[in-house]
Amino acid sequence: MDQQAIIDKIKQHKKQPNLRFALKERVEAFTNKLFYTLFDIDTPVEGNLDILKSDFEELAKLACWECENPCSKVWKGYLESLPNVLESLNLDAEAIVDCDPASLSIEEVYMAYPGFYAIAIYRLAHELYKVGFPLVPRLMTEYAHSKTGVDINPGAKIGKSFFIDHATGVVIGESAEIKDHVKVYQGVTLGALYVAKDLKETKRHPTIENNVTIYANATILGGETVIGANSIIGGNAWVTESVPPNSTVFHTPEIKIKTATNV
Image (cartoon, rainbow, N blue to C red; front, top):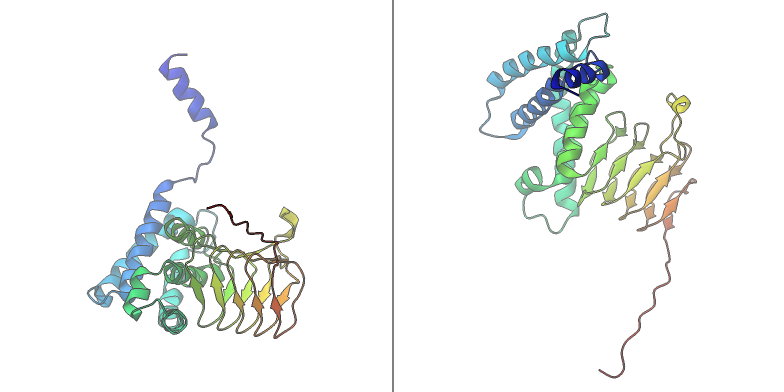
């Protein structure tokens, strides 16, 4: 097969007219600029907001091929949401400092904690998800996923003072609801019991009430599953039904230790 025949074959199977990876790259640049504008003391807010507005209009052109109304109109409402988002993120950072004895300063949390970065990008993406802005919120959280190992769907609902410790491997599904002052450790999954396309409009992921701690590698599944307030879910627990408030759930594996006697 000559080169032209190969080119023709590739074009034949290149079927998605709106699949422009420039959108993905621009979302990542927009996300970085937005994060720095909110947190970096040397990044000017005034000038960057004008740049972000222009960048957002470009994202709208690339992402909104099916929308009847111009997505650029979303910017004003999104801009107005940013002070509240920043206030929530500052509470998240303070919760991490208060809960983690290894944190030496709040600056360390903002710059070095992957859990905080994942929460920050989720909260920024969630505001766009709520108004139905297409694709960009998911690309934002997937960018954070690639950098931190934390997969938070932008549709999840997360309350105040959320703390993800160590971060890697955490999965939070689209219809999960997390209330205030919840702590989650690495490897935790808040997922669905079943995966089927016809469940799209149903609540598939669990609800976590106030002041719950979920330790490493615990898996909590199902839209009807509610973890009651002030409960503790131990490491490696597998939970598919609701837990009353003030409960402790733990997994008890059998551990055997053999010690050599002739050493």
